[in-house]
Length: 335
Image (cartoon, rainbow, N blue to C red; front, side, top):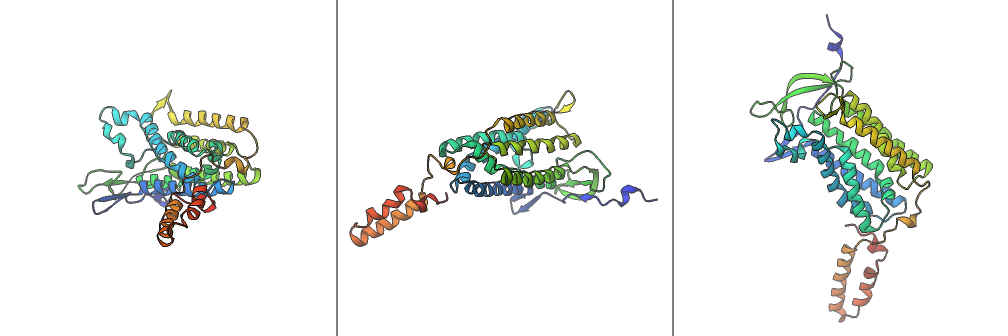
């Protein structure tokens, strides 16, 4: 007799998450993280310009925010999963292997915010306004990053028989040893679980749509859209955490990320209610410290030298003037 489980169309996991191009390993997790960062930076910059800011500002600040965010995400993961790396049988060196997965979004947002604060101070633009511009892009980047978890066969939930259950395959390396991360599937299904990474991905996309709609409909600013992003994400993450049963640090028998989700959600709601209403005027977004027009300056310098050779230097001063004064073309130079 055919059981119900036999006729369900479960979701298969990818056969592998790492491919080798010669001696170089190509990791799906890293690729999706990078793709997410690029999408967030480009879309965030476009939204910043639409709000009245200078083109390229978000990309400049991302130079600070991204490294800080990656470091913070890894630190949070290691801190809340300490025994895996520093407990009995653990290898402390593995704590540095970010390509194996393990980035805590809470640490990434906190440290990324510190990096963004540094970048904003350097450019002289308001951090809350920048947060509102990049919020939808950051959440979209998180959704893209969850696809990397799919390839790594990680961040799944409890075993289940629902039709959309995810098959977790046994993976082995070239030596035939079990290697769930970098190995290749043997076709053997170890278990069928809730695809909680997929639940979070879908939830994130819904909140992205909500953020864009709220921003257009109510014209909110002063960091309130970013707070809405944080609160919305926490709601979905709380649900996901309640479905997971993989190893995690517990407090009073409850996963630590459950407490984090609740605390951060409350903080985000308080900020949303207390922050100034309305949106910043475009002139408030103009940088106190304009970008250095490196490319334009080099171009003008080159033409000045050429002009000097041809005319005995009579054109040098007029050519140099616009670049030195930070004219319109210089202000639009990308770095």
